[in-house]
Image 1 (cartoon, rainbow, N blue to C red):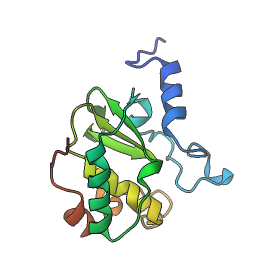
Image 2 (cartoon, rainbow, N blue to C red):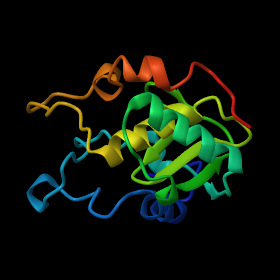
Image 3 (cartoon, rainbow, N blue to C red):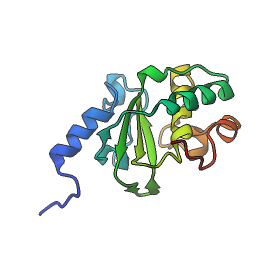
Length: 160
């Protein structure tokens, strides 16, 4: 049987190593906080990304999001990257995402910049979604606490 892939397997493994924080692929018994359920590898594991340098105005936007959320993040910790187009996954397109301290946006599109900044700020501040019960999956609402996302993440607002 021949397996076809848009991204070569060696590149996919390299991206996984580049994007994932240490221990993210560990199994529950090995100390991972939230392992991926079997068969649920998210589309971002196969993203081809390139490091980018954030423009100076992104720092100001990050601090605005911190003030709005009433939480302290760590802008210096962020590693920025871009992908050429949205990812196609089982739940539709993904235009931006973050993993650990990596924030990935579609090149030249800052629509989700503040949204991903807020995810990073919440993570640094120690916020975590509710614990899952066996067999349960996170919903979009679980990962986007209101009202902070409604107030602070922006609604399709470009910053460039």
